Amino acid sequence: MNYKVFTIFFFIVLGIGSVNAQNRSKRCHTTEYQQHLYQKHPHLKKQAEALEDIIQKKSIERKQRPRTQPESDTDDNILTIPVVVHVIHNNPDNVIGGDNNGNISDEQILSQIEVLNEDFRRIPNTPGYNEHPVGADTRIQFCLATRDPQNRPTNGIVRVFNQRRSYSFNDTELLSSLSYWPSSQYLNIWVTRLTGDILGFAQFPHGSGLPGLGSIDEGAATDGVFINWPNFGRGGRAPYDMGRTTTHEVGHWLGLRHIWGDERCGNDYVEDTPRHEDANYDCPSFSDCERTGVETQDMTENYLDYTDDECMNLFTKGQTERMRTVLSTSPRRASLRYSIGCCGDDATLPAPYATGFDDDTFFEEGWRTVHHSGPSNTEWEQVVQGAYELSNGSISIDNTAETVGSVHFLKAPFLNFEGVTNPVMDFDLAYAGNPAGETDTLVLSYSPNCFNWFPIKTFYGDQLTTTERTTTEFVPQQNEWQKIRIPLNELMNRRILQFRFENRSAGANRVYIDNLNIYQTTPFLTVKMYPNPTSDLLFAEVLFEGNQDISFEVFNVMGQKINEWTDKNQNSFVKQIDTYSLSQGVYIFRINSSQGDTVQKKVVINK
Image 1 (tube, rainbow, N blue to C red):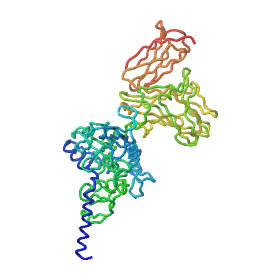
Image 2 (image 1 turned 120 degrees about the horizontal axis):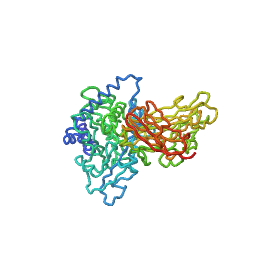
Image 3 (image 1 turned 45 degrees about the vertical axis):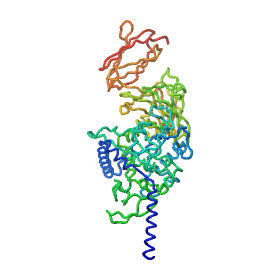
Image 4 (image 1 turned 90 degrees about the horizontal axis):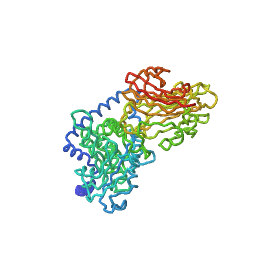
């Protein structure tokens, strides 16, 4: 090729490249948006810098942690993030879907949630799967919200008409004023038409919680992701038509930087991503960073590059570590672990709460029995054996030889713990193992978000057994029940919680639970006694703070003391009092502790 022909060829190629560059959309505007936020909220930059220092320190701590030391619950668990999609459109007829309509269809929105989960979970047989040696399942997943901020059922989609045609990053407060859910409980995604051929941008995590750096609530109302509607979900405008714009922006929202560090061969603070000279478009494979002087293969398949959607399918292990660190460190991100935004639409009941499992009506309150795993689908069932004569039943599960290895859940309703201080749970338990020494296992757990469960107490062996072992099916007598009391102080003032009993069958015998009661203790002695009148058994629910010696005195109407006793070193408890030996009449019960005393008048009737 002679010089003249080469020159013509060179400028033709250069011209084509220039046209492509000029026609190419601005894939991401997050960096520019952050600078805009820092000018508007100067404290945000300080918070971001402080948060980065914390992330780097935690990264060093993890590398120095012995391999035998387990990761934290946050590191181990799959974290589920509730999503609300705010569709801001200018379709005056509110028609949903169709060509050139910013009021996009539910199907398009659902496809984007699918893409997020495929990409963040590296799901096999989907475009999000890869076999890269540093590729990772982030163990972060997303769901459209099923509960709104007022705890009402929702599909996680909010549609708002506004006559304005398009929006820039200067308009995020306007978009938020049109529709917003608390960013401490939801990932807000605003989908609308963005100006300047921008595909999307996101707000980086802020808020270190350190003093002197401003309120962690700064920027909360605009905290989320903003996406151009033709590039949201599958089937949009090529080459950004596979939902990867949102994957890219959610990566920013979780603390990831562009893979080139937003400067020539810059630093994205992730060790297992190679240095990039600059952003890549299309699907190139090599770059020569001036700072290293070594030609290296670019990670063009990384979601934090600018390549076409079909070329992306990779988060690295280092990026995963960074995102999960943000989810445990940045205050608003960390609070998402306790969001109930995806907890279904079952009713929420107020705590304190109690049930006697006396009939099937407790299932109407929201109790659920679930066969989790194993060969048997035998369920927890209401039975007639109760913990005392006045109880009409209990909840039980039958562990036989056919159930060995089966795991069954008994899930309680959602309970609102706001304002509940010093909560305590107690329940009656009855169980007898078999003579071979086998026992089943009962695990009490709680969940703050319906997805991750944390054990409170495990009952096995002597901790589970309340009477002698037997070769026959166990049917408890009144003296074979044990009252279990568990302080729940670490759960007080939580918004919504759910409890469950998990039965792991060894094929030994039946497990019975009765009279579950969740209540709060008090710094003052409080006593509830029931029933009144009574014929044979009286129950005293004694509530107080800490451990106390509690004394009981019983007087007849003549003022004569006829009985007394002291229960030593007790926490709040329920006392079963036998009145069968008392003749018919009125009796005075005086209960004393260092926190005060109380007097109750009760009637004993004919047997």
